[in-house]
Image (tube, rainbow, N blue to C red; front, side, top):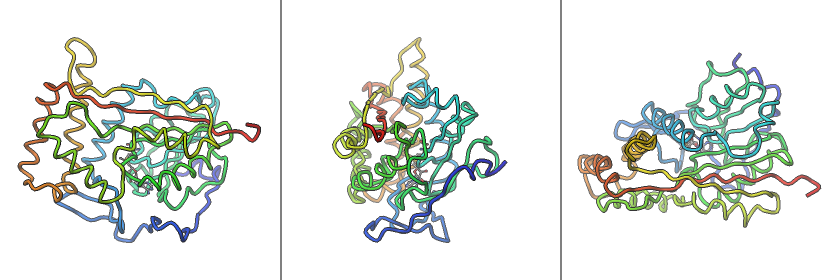
Length: 319
Ligand SMILES: C[S@@+](CC[C@H](N)C(=O)[O-])C[C@H]1O[C@@H](n2cnc3c(N)ncnc32)[C@H](O)[C@@H]1O
């Protein structure tokens, strides 16, 4: 069962390109610990989240939350292809929740997940899915024009703007079939009506981003990057927006969703605390107390932020 579909794919191993200073090797001792949290031990890694059970649990819950908000796992018009049988690539797939759900729903389609950290399932998974440990910054290990849909979500914290422009997006386009689709789903970091006491945490995270050259606010202008830098190879560009409301509307379904959205942001800020505490001049206890005010203050301030889906079709040779 393990690698049932692997022979259908032509894995191409890219040699590190000399001019990509970001290219990295996955090294032998893969983990390190900061304040009891487990991190991927990647030389000069900028990835800010831990890779332990607690973070997997948060990202799985977040997936179900977003599925509920969008009502569908993707927006590109590929449903019919997936029902008949196509090929889908999920980049930075994490623990693979999106891919596992998709592979279970579309049994005739082949799904490939790629992530630099092997937190995805290795044994128990649908027969039409495989996962590959690979650093996307070394180029995607597939030949040109392979997939009907190339998907990436929640990965704005993984790459610098130039890595998006010069490696990730061009590679996504390269491995997509002509007339196939690429799709992004990203959450805006900036929360509207943010309570004063929380601003310093958000600012410290943005500061962490700047120190590592990551634009943590890229979610809102990823669409512009697609249109200005890659439109020569893309067409039918679309953007969709949903709101994450951190407050509860009584007697509606949003009531429960608001509670889950608050739980997710609390858990997210707990999980990034080891990397942003050194930037803040407060103790862990003070930090935790601020995070714990989310339940009351985000509700009171009627906080919200946006999540975006951007998708576009790869031009065919005739276009
Ligand atoms: C925030 S998680 C999102 C996971 C998943 N897409 C989701 O929505 O739950 C980002 C993922 O990107 C992976 N990642 C970061 N940099 C990467 C790289 N250069 N190559 C491959 N995967 C990478 C991380 O290991 C992590 O699993």
